[in-house]
Image (cartoon, rainbow, N blue to C red; front, side):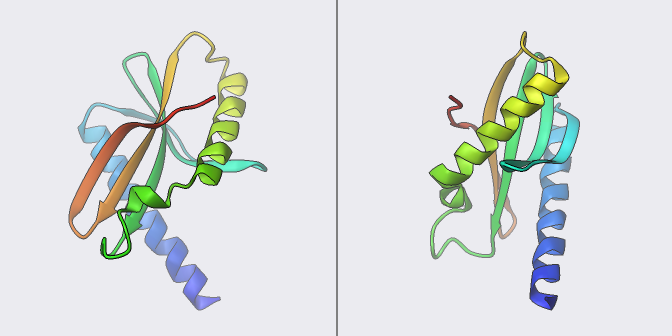
Length: 119
């Protein structure tokens, strides 16, 4: 149980780094850790008229692949389903939206816009 608690705390730390990064780059944070039974979205933000659903992934090294590679097709589907709930709940039918990934490894933050397509 201790290992899981540390993992959650570490995840929250990196999500806060990603949040600060987004704010510095002109995004407005709308929601964090938006959860539905079908999936979860780490950060929902807005820039201009675009709603952006952001998945945050971190790794201590890239020896086993970049963090973005851990956003699997299955994970993408869950994010897309959760995003559709958010769009309905907030009545955001008239805005553009996209799915981004922020990958963090060591001291590098890489913001990948349009990391995958929603369907």
